[in-house]
Length: 214
Image (cartoon, rainbow, N blue to C red; front, top):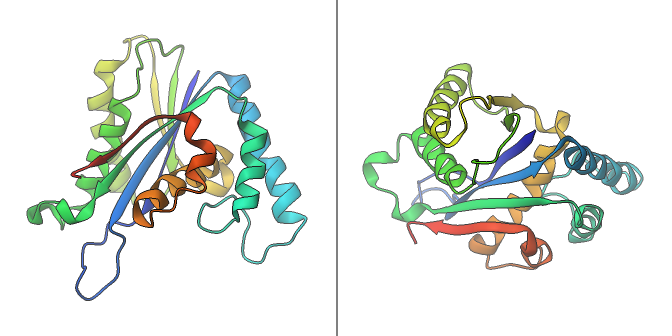
């Protein structure tokens, strides 16, 4: 069983005149193989929440979130998972280079960047099943569009006997999404703020990290 946890950091706002959107937008996928490794990842998330969030009673923080938890907590979490076999794939969009004609179609941009990231993952040996899990932030119609698009694009990379499930879940119910969130934030932060302090801690787990439209 392969688990692909997908999350993003930054925003897809393009009004740089009257508002202050992010300059970059990152989509990251955490790939972990096997039920045992996935269970170890989940347990590390739960342990960190119990020991560092609940125990310290951080106001307004109920899950691991890259933008909300301290570097100390991030490092504590990474120490728990450093020996687990997983990889991170990420693509960061330089939003100022996006074609003007596409600015109003944010879902198309999101789906395309997500597909480009997943294209970097070698799924030839995936077995017996692949589960792609992402945060449930889309409407029902958008979920259908995303699922159809990804299924069309990815099915050719998978052995026909290997099912692909696409699951949209709320992040606080899915510890794996919390894990990829803090890694996506670290990659985004490296480009948006030129701050690689957290990125440098986990960079050994990076399998792919590029800028689209540099």
